[in-house]
Image 1 (cartoon, rainbow, N blue to C red):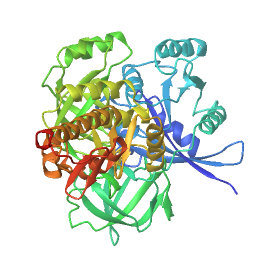
Image 2: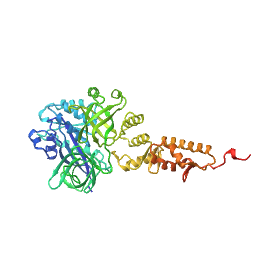
Image 3: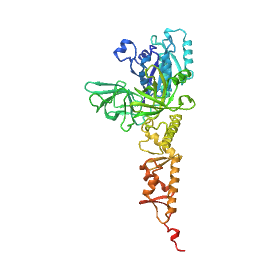
Image 4: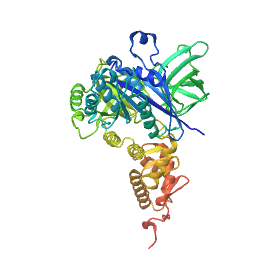
Length: 529
């Protein structure tokens, strides 16, 4: 049986370097879908096409192509297009060479964590010295994530290099892992429109999870519940949309006017209801020294910037730890505050641009998608953010740092707002429990160091009570809990902790608690000599 694998390819590059023409040559589909795009000859919004490739083992690879705008004024759309891609195709025209927007796009691809890149040298029919053009590109790629990126000369006019490009794309996609179904849906919405007789339709790139016809989902951050009436993927009606596919959903359950649903919304699973007016992040500056120095100079504490995330862009005010911009050997931590709630996951990537929208300043990664108000400068939160920034992509550290900060967490719902499946989270958690880095008790997990401190305190507390009150069979539970309040962040933990204390010889009996070796005796002064 032939398997089908779904991937996303995004184009990047300077205006008029031939991205749309290249896609049309590869697929036979013109991604310039709007009439005004046809008239101007520019891609001013996201265009879409699809390409089917065959892997060496016979698997079919369905590639959704996002054709992003190249003009500087439209970079906000470019950011929307590359948020969930598996491979980027940077197009550089042989006659123009590396241009300012080429450089900005390559930096944005770095900020958004795109790790796979193919460079297409286009319009080679207009330039004679290909060796010179290739050498220039190689020079500009030095110091980036892709210093050894494959460079393929092409001409859409003569057809030269198109077959080589298709083979290179097939080989690259075949080497990539199949996008994982993490069991939770996330579809950033890039278009919303109505179809007569059908109602509201949204489109986007399905970043995570499978969507089935009839699924119950929710629009974030508005929290509006919706149901999936119909699914289309790559211009064909489907029963299921898979992660990594371009997807259109006909949604039911929306009130007239589609309030709360717009470009930038996120359609997600119903159990993921995270939204916040602030997030805590780490900033990633350009590898180019000049660009970094310029961005550091431009970013000021309390400054308002444009936050580009998924398919939306929003005003955000940035707050930095003192001098964090200049401590180049440490993560640059910041709090972003929004006018309207945002629905982010931990490890989401984003771009910050200046308020005029003309300059890309910095990229970043979300470390805490829903922090407590006024927590940014607290010592425990700084420690958590610094460790998280140093271990991005490592699930074990994500769990450890979270449990260490919060001391105790419920297992149910752990890290739902993250790109990890419940199965993977539970597997890593079991390993941490086995290594005694985390303690499990009923529905709760505890930081092992904190648990040891609580255990030592509880033992001392009960033994002290026995010493002062030897005639009593045990310490009243109400008294024990009152003293426990100063050590435990959540009173819901009391019963769980009391039951767990049996491990260290402390037993609960009805309304009291005692050490297993204690037996009630009269005080010495009442014993006859």
